[in-house]
Image (cartoon, rainbow, N blue to C red; front, top):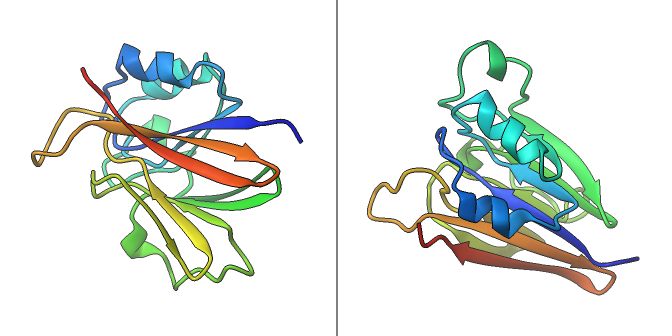
Length: 155
């Protein structure tokens, strides 16, 4: 298996900074965990890599109807569950079913492991709110494991 880079983003709320586009160059996949804001954000991300996105609580209109509230994806042998609001997750996710849960909504970047499952919130890449930094995440997937990193945005 070759090393695979995955860009993880959430809560853009219609804003896609050039800094994000540069950070995601070289990624084989981009995961957007909802509150996208506009179709143009997804279109711009698609110019960089294949995108898997879920609908957030503020994603409304025709363009958002085709987005699911959650998605399942497998990358490098890792089973990934994507949802916008972790609070709407039906139950605690067992490590036997999922390796990684990617979520957004809180605007608070977070990397934690619970019961053998990686929970990753890239934070908000959109307009700064709640006194929190704007951020994204990168996941490096190797045969030896998954290595997530939060990247704070300067702009």
